[in-house]
Length: 105
Image (cartoon, rainbow, N blue to C red; front, side):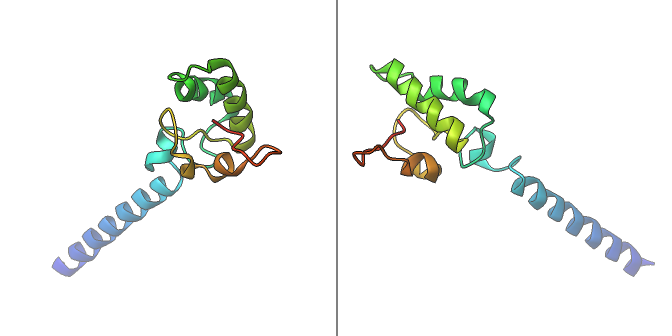
């Protein structure tokens, strides 16, 4: 009887660990997805809000908003913070202008 209880308890712990890992892998427990960062983590309707955050500290608000929203719609992500951190979103980071400069703010 004690062995059966121990096996059931072990199975319950294993199942809860598996469920937590599955939950995190679907973006519900990961840091970047939770806050709208990382490739594919932003829905198109969320782009304006994410870009307002991203562009809030720049003196070039209008062009920042224009390009941020364009990049967000294509890449479905906006990096965290007001500047930098583009490595979180490779598409956003790697999209360049014809001149080879970064397209996304």
